Length: 521
Image (tube, rainbow, N blue to C red; front, side, top):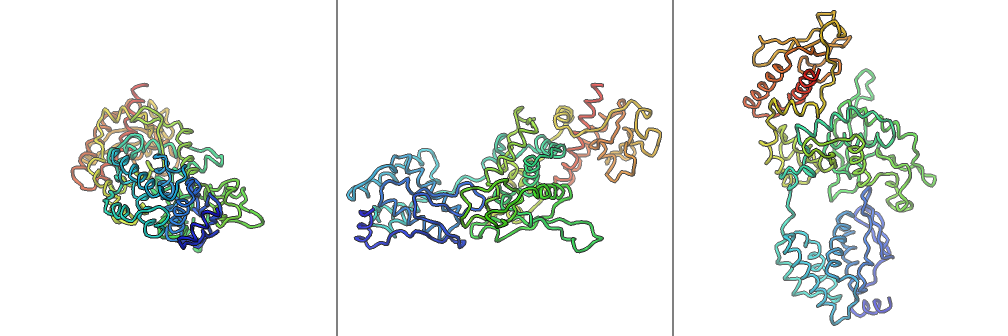
């Protein structure tokens, strides 16, 4: 340490401070090799400057990290540190000490080797952070082993941005958006059927539902608090509840929970949120005599490394990896098998985000609106979803509907031989007839409604999706399937809005399942 202090005195630089304040006004202690940053729900929260064994270069690197911490978000500072250190480690640079005469040449050699390796693998976009550090170092800590001429050469390199939207564009069956006809209905049906009452299973269910509904990143969700769920009509006793969820934004220049986007919740999603909040009440967030903010996705015990720090408010908040685990664990628990791959469905928040974005693009959302929904700062990243617009509507046919109907499992009714076996079979008002849109004169008697009260759905289209529906075993359900397929195609041909066509898909798959069930009987 004395040699470093002597070196700093010689070149006129100050020693490192023991503590700095980040852009959000929170403290970061820099008096050890491992610096803990205030990342508010993210998994990576530390920069290990001790990985650089050369004390002079460690000082230069620490100075750059302090600059990033004070002017940028904690997450970007950690990301830059990880990228720089991992790339230097790959070329064997980190664990060596250098003399003043060869430090400059060794660093130039290491940076050049990193660039050559990235070029050979067509990954030059990953060179950005290392190049920025070297250029900054040449401007501010030149005497620590940087070369101004080499920095000028680096500044002239055009570093391309990362490839955007490849997983979406390729429609990868493992990491791309869910198949709209086959996989997404499977997930939505499983959500409706999941009635497990354990704490973790409630969290799993809500995590998947939120991703499908709003398409945000895990960090948006783990920063949610119970107070963000609001009944807008609470002051009007006779008005039905209107629930709103204020989702924290994660823009780079905003502090955690500084900006929000208000989203209206449909009744089913609102019920799931309220159910989890009620269950959360049995878990305390009191720590050292202080009641901490109550996260929506609550941990049962605090994160030890956050206790006593400026990030203590997030000690009972799940991390982004915890949130990811909720989603993947739910898919395994529900034993979801992908009809596309025949293997267990791989479910992640990113796949659900892609699925949400594809749905919004298909339903006609503007690029600006979709960018806002996805919490992007501009529209450059949403173009890929519109590139797929014409491909999003799969052409359902009779063979696919018959094959996939049972796999998706939308049909929940009970098949009967006649009215004598059916609930309400003695009530002609409950007899159901199917009428096609293109030919209203063509009516097909399909079964009996088992509801005791008046049905408020949209018969006969909703009948095949209803568990109270009792289709006749000998009814011509195959004819219903043919008419629905024809109506679907007519809608797609007539309207530019593809949504009008795909609204029939769940019904078509349910009818296909009913046809196969009748055949088996």
